[in-house]
Image 1 (cartoon, one colour):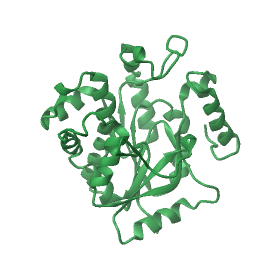
Image 2 (image 1 turned 90 degrees about the vertical axis):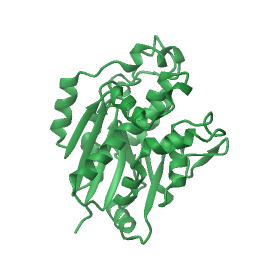
Image 3 (image 1 turned 180 degrees about the vertical axis):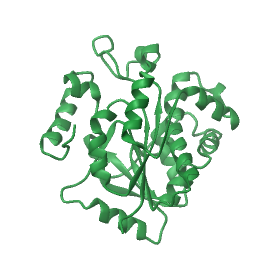
Image 4 (image 1 turned 30 degrees about the vertical axis):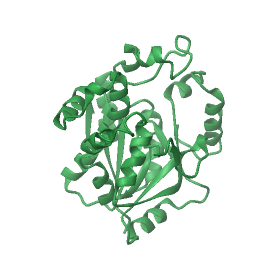
Length: 289
């Protein structure tokens, strides 16, 4: 009997309509999906106006948070037929932060809170939906609506998950971005740096990771020598460090699929990087875009 899997698909909708078939094929049968999407696109830009994706003029502009058409968004998600879904905005984020007395006033930038702390909200909501479903899962996979997992050649994903599920330890496996070509986490200014786009593990381990996550993050910011060093990968790395689960690197990788790249092959930041993705795509490893 195959494992029962739950996949968290979260954050900005972006290229989901391009990759949804690929995800279903990759994750295989006996998989349930839980979706939590922001109601804005969070970072798709006009490259001629803002030549760099990290241009602060753009990050602090209203255009960064341009709204997605809600009817379109809801229709696309419903058509995918997840077990449950939610579409959210940052009002919910600030309510949850207020509930734990998060020290919002110590941050100069609202963007930092929306982007860095807010990034944990959609998967947290999905984890709550999974818990409330009362469905017993063996494995939970945390992914995003705009990324694809990439497996090594001849890699048997189902066998890999069976081995993970049958391990005597509570385990979480994290992944690296394909274009980074890194096989391990790194230390940045002495703090573990682990990207949060795609990781997976035993169901209990993932649910435990997200339980009370904003209270955990608040405690990190209560450590004076850490507070100025933290961004999302560092927060993620520290949260992994504090978990009781065994945390290891996965042989899988992931990559962002940008809808605007696919639509127009335009150079918003790094066309060479897109061509590498295109090379994977043309090789047949990505077949449904």
